[in-house]
Length: 338
Image (cartoon, rainbow, N blue to C red; front, side, top):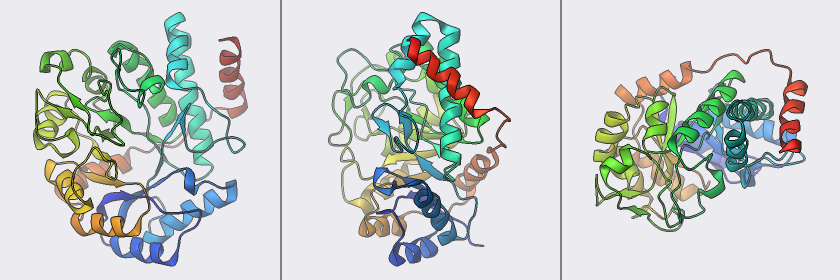
């Protein structure tokens, strides 16, 4: 079987079109990602996930989703319960550290119960960004706290809960999205903080969790490192900070290549991501012409990219034997009392 190409793709709707099936079969993305537009009812989600994997002949192909809780939760009631945002977990942690860590672990474990039912195996969580006062709410209450120690502790507990349920987490947004004063979906954030300041705050949660299997990049310019390119397309940020200072040797994907923080057309953006040394280009919108442009640029996984992809695939483990009803009751009681 031929190797996968270095991208993750979305699709347009609730079911695959024949054009999408043919495209995926020919271009073989490493994995797929679901968004709200892909979510209908339970059987439909399972069928869509199965169809995505079937299109590339890979029954274990990773299927990702952003299922954080709060406003970033792609699958919502009545299919799954509505979860609190990261700040709510942080509030419990500030009152009672051990209870907060338990809440974080439980939420990760419950996400795994929910998502594995549909065949979804990767959650783009935890959010390890450390917001600063006045920063844009694109992160906002998605963050667990405003200091790196809190963010690290809760992020690690959340990740462990996901992994206990048989899922893989994706740390985001490396090397840190907390200092943004604009929304990177629409504009390019520029961070002017000095390197020492970044090392003493923004980078710390990622360095502490550098042994996780997967991470997502930030579409932000760090002027102290590379004033000309956002981290996603900066070879210097990837080489010196993410791989060097932070020490992350896992699978590194871009944030969505469609976001307007990135300049140029889809070909230029995807090419820049690969040239910078990221392992995978993430394309989320399901727009066929854009998907084709990405697929035309990205290489077949080989060398270090292939090694990291295989390491991520090997990191999946069997779920523990936890009883869902008991964990859900425990978690919900925490927030009824909060």
